[in-house]
Picture 1: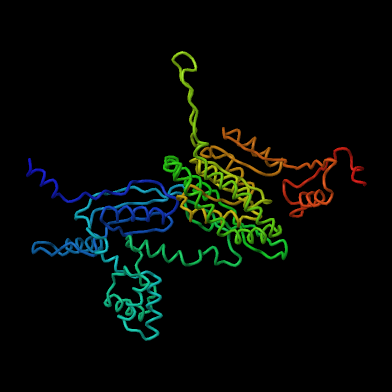
Picture 2 (picture 1 turned 60 degrees about the vertical axis):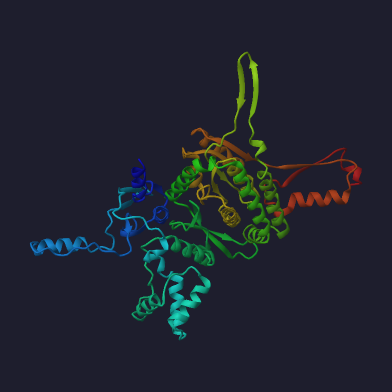
Length: 511
């Protein structure tokens, strides 16, 4: 019996294949397979790729070729065939295939077995010794400055102490640079260190959509800010200067489906996340909003045109809702009544609905998005936000802060557009609830259209304030309040004061 146990313990560890699934894009699929492979002790490489259709991933054993010596009785044609099939870098039978189907990438495992033992240390794999693209450019610059390979390596390790490369690898890079091959690094092998270097590099550089002039406002799909493939866009103008602040591409139908799919896929894990964990993310979120309130206010002023003081108030009113979301745990408690009748207990529980959507107007670019998604996601839902196409910048900034606070990929998504997106949100069967703020006609249209698909609808329309002035009111304070309420933000807000009721008549004021 003891011998049997020892034998079982000596068996090589089984390396599991990544679970099949559906992904928003090719990069997400590759990252999923690569991260899972590293956790199992092997490294994957791209064996074949047709970027817009299919990608085939294999196991990279680090360039160990299978021994294929020619036998004496083997014909030359058979030897050529064997040599051709054995000339690939990968000689492990593992193979995963990703194919694009109806706008999404589907992962299937063609062969999940391996013919080798797992790596005890991923850093031993040759891929861990490759330089990042940024490091290759630094090597090029330092070579031109006259530094030697050991000096170059010493400086690279100052910024990346985990670098495993040797002076020999620097010599190889320099040789390829002399041949005019700047893109030295091979991105085919995926390992933990590479993912870290890539993410660390992207953290200190501006995203591509911010580098455009004017900026192109991105979609947020599956936790990634992606530029839309749409050729149609709307200019966002600064009302004070009439200059183009940014351009809003109209989200395509394929991108909208990808956003809904990301939210739907993220929902099961997110709903099972403890509410205390969700609250902690909201605590961090409100802290980050306070940190960047100046940037948010400037963004609102440049896109919407309201005074900077009003823009600060816009953010602060929304921040109050985020603070409220930080204490939702007690509000999520259900009810229980024992023995309401003989042998019958009554109880109720509160559960998240699933994928929810929010459609925002232009008058409060920060406050109204913050009315919607913080409460929804803290309750365990996932969310599709459609900001106004006239001032979407604040919503994108808030989404960046929510991601920084720790909101998981796919929990919050952002799409842009006009009538087509509104119809898509109303008609999609995977969206369970809609919150809308806007004019009467649009609200009535969305309400009736979404009701046909069984959605829960919150339609906030026709907001108009009335002021009631009592006989003992202070004239100066009243006039200041009426002026701000009626003409703040040039009256371009749904809660602009439209009616004043004087109790007892205005003659009491001596008018």
